Image (tube, rainbow, N blue to C red; front, side, top):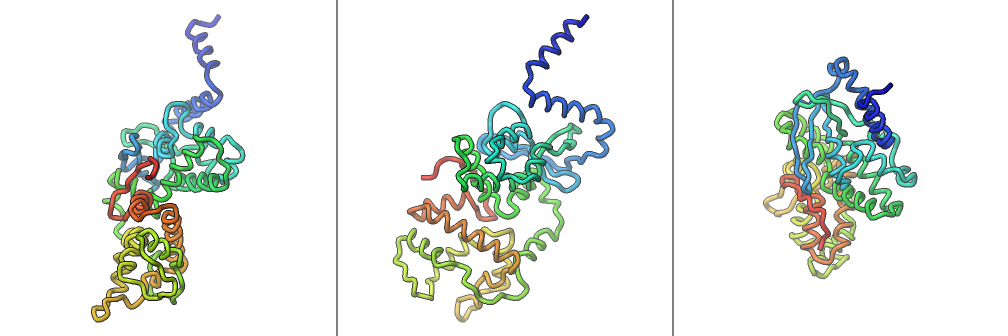
Length: 332
């Protein structure tokens, strides 16, 4: 005959959803093997918290070099706030629609379903997602939106958060965002910045090519209420300053400084000998530049004044020496 405690346990188990039972079983299985597995699990070497839109996001650097965001932090950062199933199970529920799911690779789906187990600095078994998974998740959701696969208000909200994050976390942004919170940035290898610059900057300046389309300049003149002459080759001095501000200052850490060093202003002419983009590498630097220019043109095309465009740019792709502004409200 079963005891009241056993009967109560059976009743509670029947009341659980299938997802919750799976989650409990998964954590229970790991807990049983904890003594054996602990020595093999990565540990958090650095931990910290970021405040974002009213939520505290726990972030960690692991001993194996990975950067992770906690399960609940991942949900909050894409706009999936509130209570309910946690971690991978809730994320998989978000992707339950087969049409939306088709935009996500098997790698992303597998990573979402199996969060990374690791030991926190307090020796607690913890779960999280690698920073690159957040990046790929956001790209996939953005593609689903652009293909008009999203139908509900909730789905569109997730896509809006993901697209804002993609702009805000441009090139190494997620890694830097985590490292700043954990303090790991102070211990990064000294040649880390050099490796970034090496990918962007060419040893010898490349041949001239039309990297900045006419549309880029047309929008600048339109937003600044100035007449635009497409046949005029020589641009006024302020165009160079604007281009430095909205493009080169936002590419990657140290890139603008390195370009200014390699391509200095000639005192006699007060101009540079070459265009900055002629110094960028063809396989990495120039594609990244063109990608950013495309984002800037997209933002400019959706605004009617320079001030509103610039405020949006500051939130979407802040200058690399400034703190990102996370404002998920509507733009004016």
